[in-house]
Image 1 (cartoon, rainbow, N blue to C red):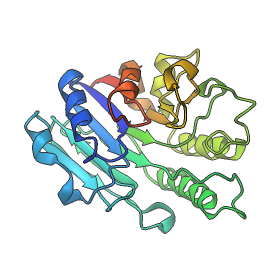
Image 2 (image 1 turned 135 degrees about the horizontal axis):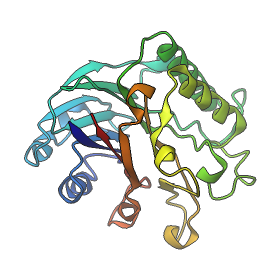
Image 3 (image 1 turned 60 degrees about the vertical axis):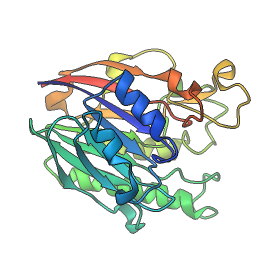
Length: 262
């Protein structure tokens, strides 16, 4: 069974319902993972998505903050949700597809503006969240799995517009990159986007603060698609739908896609 998966930090699923339905109509991924839904589960506009063929949903929600959801055209059941770092935040949901593939959808904390856990509690929470992600997958027999989401870290030098200028900026600091590498090593996760696009600058996020985000192109690759080694070779056709950043009332993130032949 071949299926296409997309991950997108939507920055309010209710505010941007029209953008979600546009993506579902124009690109029609079989599985769509959203982060930062900012909605209780019962307020997510699931009926509108069902009408477009997304008949299955697993989600964790919060009013006004966080929130993760997976919508699928393929039969899917919930496969768990963890409260990493005991933050009480809706930042993880997992769904299992009918072919046995488990999809983990994450929204890792952004970490605030100061890259110092002593001066910034949010940065410490981010590091703790990543450490618990690492330990969770180290302790599990993780197979036939995909991990996606807004991981809020751009790990490679070519994942940011200027490596040297961003070394002290949260999302690209050496300690964050190290912690994310530990998560990746915990289940030998393969970075599918970079498997397909091994060279060159690749971005999925552009700040709202930029007057002309497209021309400035000061982006970061914060959104990721990973897979366990047993299915990573089945992945292909990765792409980032950059155009969505220019849609009316956009999220500051663009969807990341990959197709799996399983």
